[in-house]
Image (cartoon, rainbow, N blue to C red; front, side, top):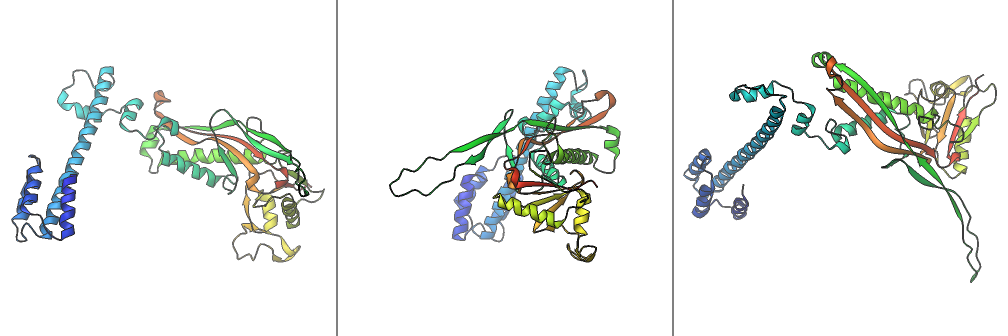
Length: 408
């Protein structure tokens, strides 16, 4: 409804009345000629048993005007859509790509619906996002869902507290305080000595993880399940697995630098014959990390060591389980810290860490793209997933302990 009608309706409602003759005349005279039905409905309400000045008649007129406005909005939308389709058809016809030359123009709409538009034509009709934010093929809400799935599938990324630094450009450097002088007691009126601080830089250069699959169009069309979602989920899971593996044991050459690489954290190598890491070893690392001014908040464990920790008993080989009774859920916490078990850790390894001292650079989130033109001659659809990440680094090696059991 127009603003004047809204104001007129609000005044009538505030005064608890219907419309007077002047207001009714203004409404009827403003109705377009093609809205004969609306005019008829309003006249029927005015001449009805309630009379023109009743609240019931007022509400009936308001409902008619609202329905008329909705029809007008739908008509405008249909007209705009028809104009866009006509524009795309005209472009395609000039290129000789869609409409058959000499085809009857009366059947133009049917001819358009029977031919699949090209990628550029489809984008002219369906615009989802912008190329810089994931492209037309991936709406932002889909990209967000991929990021959430990646975190859920990664034992490394799902830990809260890890610093994820988003950046643009080729690389970036994160300043890191390596040492600083301590303040001292200064006498009254004495000169306060200047302190010194030494900084180093943690440099992050992005690397790309990518996956590519092809799917037969016959299988995609005939499958009883959502094959597109299945393939997209598989690619994101594959990337999560590889990122997880490199985050723990990557060499830094054509991969992330893993937490277990020498020099990233503090190595705790157990002596010969100690093949199982115990809670005593974890408590020692917990205390050493506290002494370094950090706060442990996560335990990562390889499956073989998690098994032994969960089976630890009060009296060695017998007594109650430290993790609880066998009727209790499998222990997911120890010393108040969450325990994340991952086969992507090297065997015989447990990591105790303050995740707030771990830094990862993120150049771009997961992107899933689809192309029906990639292998046009084979009648397949291609699916591609990419993820650009940089790092990782630990700003204080004493805040992360890598406990390694002996091989034998």
